[in-house]
Image (cartoon, rainbow, N blue to C red; front, side, top):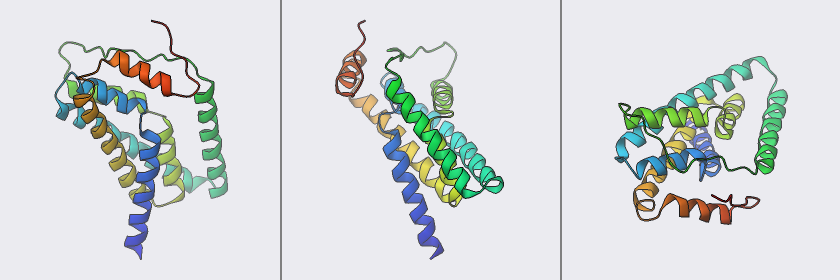
Length: 188
């Protein structure tokens, strides 16, 4: 029964994080960087960043669970998700850059690692992982969430290697803006 529960929690975490992360900024970073560079340093940089971020989130969630009652934690997680959703709905600015600037003498592994680490720190998926780890077993949450984020990154690298090498990023952004509800394309 314990192995079934472990697998169930891992699959639930994997499903939740996968759905939350599809089309998110980390996947777009992987797509953009992989369209111009070899895929393995991009995959390894993103994977390393997600391993660190999920470890921090699980440790934070598990330590909070030791201090606060479960009802308080559930309420805090709900408020944080609600605030994040309202922020997304109200934010109409598209401040993303079309070009990923690469600094000389910096490896693509380090560039990808730092971009993902900084972009995803405190993101909705990290909050979700911390919230899950505060109420259910932390190890299967970490495993499911980490596999989900690495899988989405690999999907982004694949898309970057296939789609963005044939389609300019400018046209992909316009397509995404056109189909995104509540977003208006900004004139360039």
